[in-house]
Image 1 (cartoon, rainbow, N blue to C red):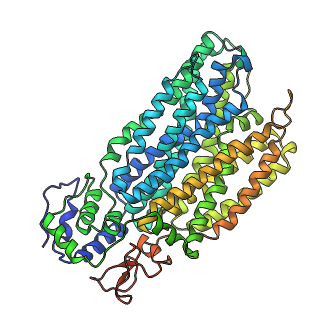
Image 2 (cartoon, rainbow, N blue to C red):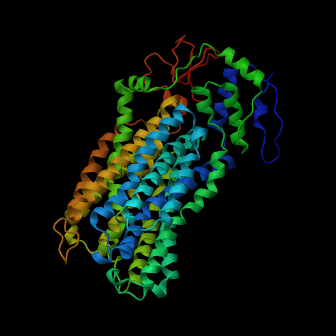
Image 3 (cartoon, rainbow, N blue to C red):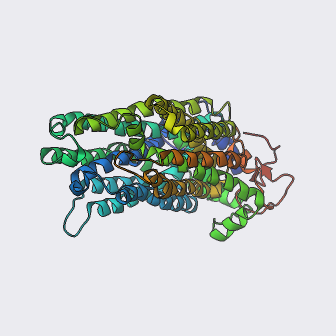
Length: 570
């Protein structure tokens, strides 16, 4: 019998002792994973969603408030250009975050597979907090450009934001109950919508707070003196407030236990993994197994020697066509989606101007309308879309929702692009809301969820990072190459003459997303072990070890020489 551990009360049950009478370490592994997979939805699931989701709130807040920040930077620092940043400056600030995000997604994703999820989780939030605070405090001088300095800090902030994508997805996935795993991951990602709303609400409050100063100027170019001072305070406060939710979530991220699946399948520490299951379900930091039991379990599983994840092994694994096509499906879908999603989202002020929410008789009214317009758009389209996904993803499935989303988005962008000059402001508003609805009740949510489920444990985080990084490459292309096309041939009367062609380009990317969706598997209500068993392992178990006894060594796709059971979902 394994030695029992102390602790536990009515609020935090000590689950570690539940399986103390089971001698076989592999059987304890199976029972521990079954407890995660079959657990009824409880408060520990809510805690996991909130801790991971708070980071996504911060990420979204920081990413999407930039369209408002660049407007205010122009007002304060570009009096020689009618109070607006040059188009290359505006684009560079927006692209900087995406560039850093690509580095963070691939880098943190890879490290989480090498050193573990626990060791990396929280570090990305520290980087976000530090870089965000630095942005809010930067200034301009003879030897330093405000735009250049902000770009530098936004790249660093982007690295932290990028790390949050694979880590939050994988940790939520590996701790979630099978029945509601999609809903839990969708709820984490839905905080992106609340982050967008939070940024708009903060801007609304700041605009109201500085109303008297903003009323002194009618246009951006004439906003000087007390008006410019007010706007300078506003953009710094808008950026700085973004660290508040991050600080709240930091402690909980730094003290989570390692995910049991990583401990079981990569570290191969069965006793520690079992203890961490109980720690997670009881809200404790991490499990503390008996050292004698750990040594015994390691001797018992000596045949399950697992190679460390390496670049060579990674490329060998994905060189098999079946495996490579799944990664192409997740990465390609995310890339195609983000071209349109970020191309439209980070330039929402342009769309709001086109539909009448970006103008006004004074600077106060202009900024107020922009903030109020963003609130309306997010509440009308984005947030309902996220929660429609949460409500249906575990019944309808991931693949049908993503396929439906790409098809409908293709149609909407075709209508918007080819009928652009015949649409009224209200028609454009309706189209924008519908596009946001089907972005989020569609591929924006599913491209985040599926990569967190369909890959084997030892490469799950790396593969998610590659998929997410592909998406941000798409957003960089949208910002640097496609979105600027809207001003091609601009005149004093027509600021965005090519906006219709930009929408047509987006429709092409949405159409191509239909075909990449066909490459991904359906993951609805299947255990992660069952999904990993679908891969072409080339004679290996899902953990990477050589299969010893093909007839009896598989348990849900896992290598185990201690338990002989039929291949069924736990």
